[in-house]
Amino acid sequence: MHDDRPTWHSRTWLAATVAIAVVLCAVLAIGVDSPVAAWAAVLTAAGISVALAVGAALKARSERRHYEAELEQWAAEKATQHERLRIAGDLHDLVSHGLGLITVRAAAASGATGPHGDAERRAALEDIETTGRETTTELRRMLTVLRSSDGTAQDAPLRPAETIDDLPGIVASAVNAGVRVDLTVAEVGHVSPGVQVAVCATVREALSNVLRHAGRTHASVEVERDGSEVVVTVTDSGPAPGHQPQPGAGHGLSALRQRAEGMGGRLATSRTGEGFRLRASFPDGELR
Image (tube, rainbow, N blue to C red):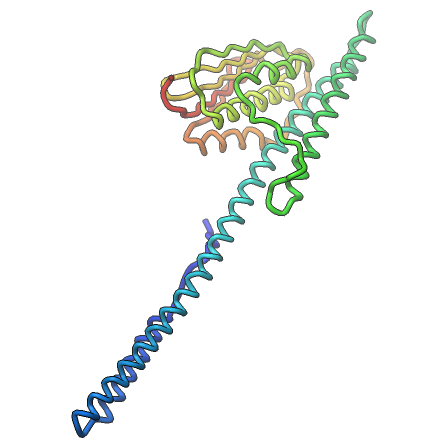
């Protein structure tokens, strides 16, 4: 991978050493006729050498400070780029989840018939409106962050990081869209904030995939601890009758895998009969 980190190349001491050597060689080449002249030559050479050494030290110090300033700027830019990439991933998750809900609810409303058809269509439109407003609000907040010069937004509303306690709300969004979800959260003990955010992101993206690929089907979400790992498993029963899959770009699953691997964990997917299973594990120390 290409690394554009600034490097420090200083030739100050090399130039000073060469200059000192030239002075000494010149003194030796000229020669001296008396002890006084010899001492004078030595003192002159020593003075010139000290002056060159001091000058070299000052210049090297200046170059070092300039290099450290460049390195600090480079590190800040890298941190900003990393944060913007993280926000871009959050944007994808947000838009993918919101549009997935809207699409499925719209499809369900268009096919609603019978005596309860009007009521189901009204409920679907209300869900679409709510999801659209929430998604738009979050998009504005994140775009404000992206437009700022340092990757942060002072006037953008902040939200607390998601925790495992937010899983019922995440599942409820999928249930409102028509997916029948069973949520099981075992005793996991203390879980670090970063792992809790990753668990929530995994469940949200997995249920969004269920909506897109399987529609109004049944799914189970399980969160448990396996030794030093927190494990998330999302399994669906396969496409609902008549559902037309609406595949996305595939970035969501790729982002989840990168997140898991970046945290030292892993993500695996597999077929289970007509259904699909996603299993992600995140290292998080021992149960407390």
